[in-house]
Image (cartoon, rainbow, N blue to C red; front, side):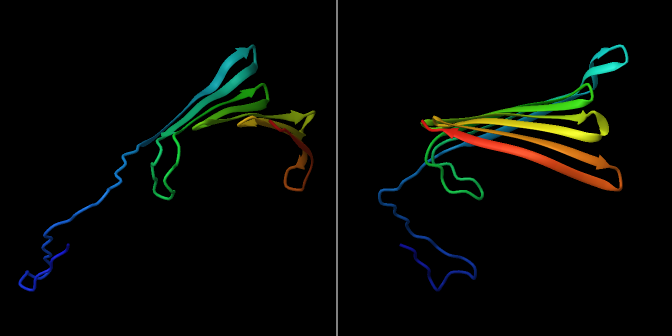
Length: 171
């Protein structure tokens, strides 16, 4: 019952009693953390050759309880945990980036492992890129592979050709 009286001061509301019947009160939490660190410069060097350089580690973690609601999302209907780990480095004059992404959404698990390798192809005018990804979505395996070759002459010419394939293995 809400009671508003005419003798109240302007801007004042008197509330007499509030009754709830069968209230549904939930307390849920969510947390997230991220970390990234780069070891700049040469990590391993032999003579004048920098074998490994600019090594970066990253980690993202989140845990969300059932019934947790974020700013722009609906309440979740299951506990979930996610961790994504990444490593990126220069190897000679190439670069390698790899990631491991693990998600657990009660009771299912989902994993993704991927890498991207980029290197000059013969000269400074050609670049080759290789991507691979393997995903397990609760027992359904999918794989993707793509390659890209780019030819570029600064300020005048750029062209590329790519191939890609994807296939799935049902549970």
